[in-house]
Length: 210
Image 1 (cartoon, rainbow, N blue to C red):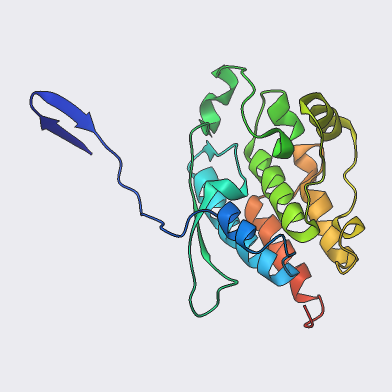
Image 2: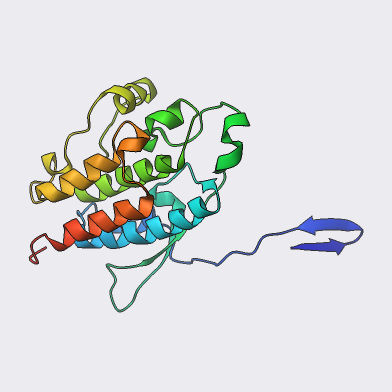
């Protein structure tokens, strides 16, 4: 909205206040304990719902990561907080991407190849969400290193299956995550919602012991 005070126009934006901090804060409080697949799928499903809404309105977020999800705690089930997608600071309208500045922006750990090339598409957010899911499941992102090393790996190195770092993960989880991390956008799931649905289905097949 806008208000005029003392002859000056003040433009403002109202957002929910999330006193419980970010998903990154929540994860840190868990002391690096790995999350079971069903919990990860629950979080990814919420994230995907928000991203799908943005995509349907022609917006690509371009910086999907735990610190950009605010949360509300769930007292009845502490392991299942409610997420709120935030920080659209570098988001772009899909219809104007081609004419936008070719400055590379984003978080190197989770940037898809096409984002490094300044040609993001909707599937770019799916890739970053898959990196986040990978880290929640495996305890580390698929690629680590300096800026140049990360760029090379995102372009040219196939990520190891998440089960390489968490032997309790079944092959079906690996399959879903690695498809969402495909180098070419067209090889990923058709939509970010499809990715979340596939991960949920895969998680339901895992042992109830988790």
